[in-house]
Length: 241
Image 1 (tube, rainbow, N blue to C red):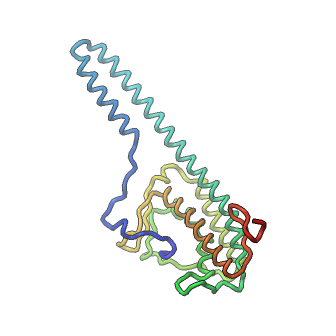
Image 2: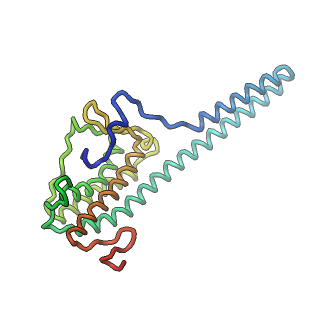
Image 3: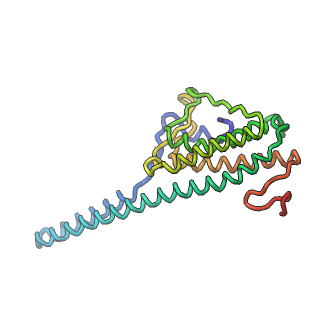
């Protein structure tokens, strides 16, 4: 798995803390409080009643801004979940077609000694939707505690069944996910060596990107094997391009 994920281990070390997202709500409240302090200096020596009115208005302003920002944050998170779900469904259809094109007698083939075999690459593609479910349900993956092992796939029928299982796991996890979960951190590590610390939203995006990336890689493998390719975002030279 480590060779598939393309993380740069130099970016994070075990002593680093992940960057937190800045909150516009905090900035808004600070600005309003500064404005309130200035007005208090101006009005307190003139009229206490005026000061109370201004304080009340500013309190209502803060309350209104808080409600708006919370609503925007919730809408954004829900929109992201919906977009992830829609993208997963669309990419699953394309992925299913190219996995179905893998010949049963080419599973051990590889284009270069340093390359993955067709079996390794196709199996990794099949499992990637399951990373979405794993990311939502856990806080980290530690290779030292849980060494990665390829699913043993012997033919394309087993490959498609494995992909469908992982796809349904990822799909159901997205349907049940909450905005709070998207903002939580998720760590990829090997014992004390930390490869990456990202929000779960970022890891889900990475999983979808990895699916597309490795699917294109498999397309190159199949082209070299002279296997007709199905279309992805349009037709190929084999089906009417």
